[in-house]
Structures are given as structure tokens and as C-alpha cells.
Image 1 (cartoon, rainbow, N blue to C red):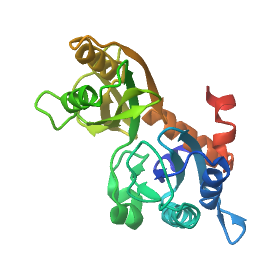
Image 2 (spheres, rainbow, N blue to C red):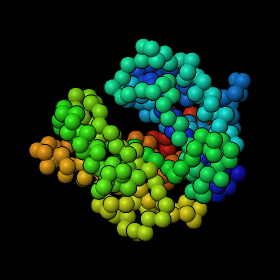
Image 3 (cartoon, one colour):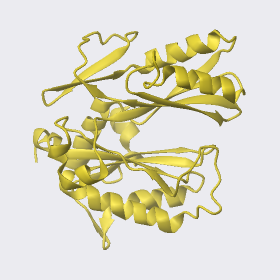
Length: 265
């Protein structure tokens, strides 16, 4: 199957699970997406596993052809429900359940219809990534003020940004979901610009630049006499995700998370 053909029939799921401290459980959940009755699925790959020990949460990035993604995600969810006991689970980040969030994103950029029934049932949207900025403070109320100020729903917030503040490794982290959105007119893609724009199969999307998010958090923190410590990106940029998915599935690499740094980084 050609990469262009793959690109028009791929979707990715960001599976959030309430476990990070037991690596074998996290990897067993990821592997459950790759097999059925002991046989490996073709056209399915786990692109990345990101685990945060303090939050005790992991994000598993699963890519697949749209007709297989639903069953693969369901298998991973069932493994998570069996392996994670929420009665004893502990972590800084609030947990709704063993599996908290199952967003599905079309990699083709042509919307929900291209992703078929499973995406329509669970919900599909343009790609999202996480950008977390740590402020040099232990004051959660200050962190919440900053998160509120940059949130897209606020009057002067950043479009497509969802933000919350959490204690993290002795400081406060401003954790942001950065969603892509359609029809942004800007064409400025320099490092300091507010938006990054990209095109997938002729459709144009944008998202707020992580550099810009960090700059805004730094400015808001500085207004209160607080510095920032650093920024962390969780997952891939949209085009990185698409490129990794096409490569992994074309090469039949199910456990892509184990080798991806040697291929793309």
C-alpha cells in the first residue's frame, strides 16, 4: 500500500490510562492493541508511550487503518480495565477511571466521514498534542490563574488550547492540550510566530506554537514575580505523527515506540 493511500485511511488514538509506575502493565495494554487471539494485526502500530511517574498516567499513541482502529482500541481498553484497580490507584493528576480519554484523530485531515463508523461513534477531531510548562512555584492558585488566562475559552485565551494546573515534581505544571483547527489564515510559520500551519491532503490546519504558549506562560508568571523552569512536549507534532504512522505501518512495525528515536530523532 502506498504512503498516499495509507495517509487517506489512517487515524490515531491517544489512549490515556491511569498507570505509569508499573511499566510492564503499560506495555501489556499497548500490546493488547496489536494482537487478536494471539495473532498480530496488520496495519496497526503503537507509535509512542509516554509515562509520567508523578501523575501515574500514561498516554499510548495507537495508529491504524480506520477499519481496524476501533477493535484495537477496545482491546487495549479491556486490558486496562482488567489490569488497573482504581480503588488503590494513586497519582497527582485526577483520574476518572482506568481509561480517562479516548480521542480519535483522522490523520488524513478530511474529517470524521473518512474515519468511518468507529470515529463517528467515539468522536473525531483534528490532531492534538500536549505542551506542558513548569513555573518555579508551589502555589497552585497562581498556576490556576495562568491556566485560566491562556485557556481558549477565556476572553483573551489562546485558540484551541485547553489548560489546567497541577502540582508536579515539587513545582506547578501548566498542562495544555493543543488542538489543531481549520482555516487559520496566517502563513507565518517562524519559530516565534503564534501559529504553526500545515496541510494534509490539501486541507489546511493550524495550532498555537509551543514556543508561543511557553512565552505567554512566562509572561504571566513574570507578572507575579515567578520564573519558568522549562517546557515539555508530549507526543508528536501533527506531521510527525502522520509520517511515523505511515512509516510504521508500511514497514509492519507494531512496537514502533521501541525504535522510533533511532528512526526519526
